[in-house]
Length: 451
Ligand code: ADP
Image (cartoon, rainbow, N blue to C red; front, side, top):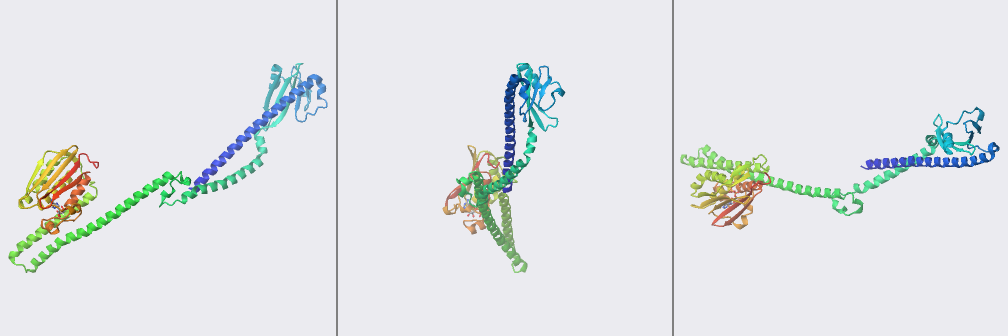
């Protein structure tokens, strides 16, 4: 960056210098040309007066080194010329300055020499007798003058080049130094500092990005920890049913089991493998939800219908433990992922049945409130102690582990519910009285942002 700034400053300085030089030379050349013309005009006026007073005598003893002086008669023939023989000179009537002087009393002209290396300034004045006196002076052309000055100009340019080189390099270093000295870890310390005024928006940007990075880093670390814990828990949860399956199978294999015990042993193996399957299914569901539900299809659904379907599929499980399930409410439409809505109702109902009492009931309510769909699942079960209400949504957390296992729980149901509600931009709350029952309330917006 420093070399880029240096180059820019240097090029700009040189360009400005050269432009100024050309401009100044042009102005001076014009000024001196004007001055020379003025002088020539005055000299011509003076000489004209002299000639009109003294006639040809005026030219005697005249020192006209700097000027060429020509006296032309009224018919254009040259009467006198201080540099050539008058008699041999051609008629001057057609010369521009002579023509003008004849017509208006005074005339001027500028003519370049054939080589264009110099030019001739002419001033002519008409005398009272009708003749014309003309004075001319030689002037170097602009570029000839420039050529003459080539050496000093080159020296000046060289000095300017070196000077601007040194200055540009110093300036570039001075500009870049404070930027190089910035501590990217603490950009805030430069706020309000005069030296960093121009880069303050950049510093603020860096600071904001750093904060974001730190937040992201924390989130990544947190996620890694959760994943680690989850993997450890999953391994543990898988190991227990597998151990008992393998234990029962081994006993049967060894032939030590009485024939009447084989059936209950096989049914143990069966129930443990069902638990394993449920666990694996829940883990798959959670993993999908962890990916943000990206492959899920959003569509218009009726939450009431979904609730009825979920209740129907739990009918057998409910009657097995003598619990009644009822769905109330009316059709409630919303844009959602139907599979996830089903999973929400199913898991909440499943819990309401599992943690109920014999002869208890479950009431599922679905209603629309403004733009929101509201689902309630109320049971007459064992209730959830106040201090456990936040933790039950954690993965593998159970209030009573042995009861959960006895009813085939995996400890993942409410985590799946919470995740699915979050993907819909909704919220989940619960009210519970220990020993009397629990009511979960899920509120879902009609058009979640994620849609
Ligand atoms: P589980 O598979 O063990 O049911 P969940 O994540 O679904 O796992 O629930 C976590 C824990 O919350 C359960 O083990 C249970 O202790 C408690 N719980 C969930 N729903 C209810 C309910 N309706 N009534 C009483 N306790 C409940």
